[in-house]
Image (tube, rainbow, N blue to C red; front, side):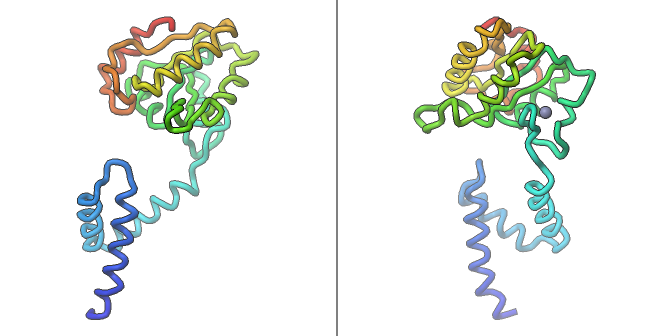
Length: 203
Ligand SMILES: [Zn+2]
C-alpha cells in the first residue's frame, strides 16, 4: 500500500491535467473527477476506457455530409425517407443531434467542422466548404438552410456561404432570429430551435 501512493500522485496529476484540457472542465472539476475516478470500481474505469478508445476506433466521418458515424455513408444520408432537395449546414456534429432532436427537419445535413474566424486563423479553406460546393454542383438540391451558430463566426460563415451558393440558383435560407445572438446551436432548446427552423428566411 505504502509505495502505491507516490506513483499515484503523479498519475493523479496527469489525469487532472488531461481532464482540465476538456471544454467546460476547470482545475477544480478536473481534480474532483480525478479523485472520483480513483475511488471508482475497476469495472467502471474499464468501461470508461473502452468508451474512450472506441470513440476513435469505431467512428469515421460520413464521406457525404461529414457527420460522425459508425458506417459510411451515415444513417441519415442512406435514409430514403429524407428529403434530398434540402441540406442543412451546421458547424459541428452535435448540431445535427440538436436539429434531429426537434424531429421536424427531414432533409440532409452538411457538417462544416468549424466556422470562418479570421481572428483564430480559420479561413474558408480550413472547414468543409469545398466539399459542400462540390456536393451542390449538379445536385438536385433546391434549398440550403444555413444553421451556423448565432455568433460572429457563425454569421460570417453564413454570409460567405450565401455568396457562394446563391449563384448556383439554390435558395439559401437562414434560421430565424428566435435564437438570441451568441447562441450555439447545440445548447438551444427544442422549442426555440423548432421555431427557428420553421421561421427560417431567405438569406
Ligand atoms: Zn452523411
